[in-house]
Image (cartoon, rainbow, N blue to C red; front, side):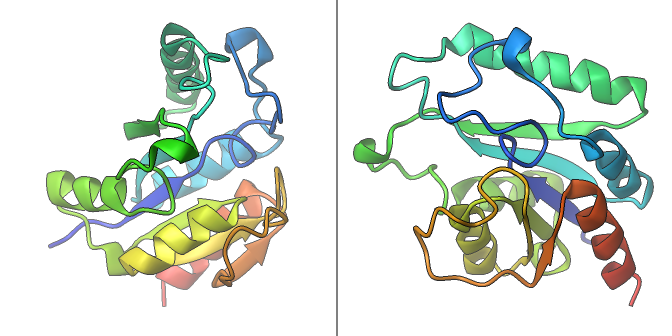
Length: 181
């Protein structure tokens, strides 16, 4: 039986959005309710993944070591709540590099599905950016746009999420409710 997953964007969904990039652990702040939302999803049996564009690395504004440190910090804090992130996927390229891993491209979703035996049709993408929603739609996932972070105001892609929620905690409740149908 294929597993179900929730693929989460990081900045603006899990942690506070910073237009100048979150450069180190000291600048990282969980959005209120994000940890609890991830706990709800984890306890409902979803595998959790993070897929995040981190162009600040390519632009020299974020050191790769600091990006990894932020990831470790998040995993420790989530571990205290009994929540596991199965894998984190970062695209550290700039938009201009036209790589095959930058959202809205679906490479990381497809890799996770293959590696972990995930049914993308039974899985969800949660993001604050239209590139998150487009990636999810293009891969056959259900999608939730959260109003935290950019709240879809980036306007880069003309896509509509399946649901719009105030934050990750509300999104988690909606996902669990809809997946029980």
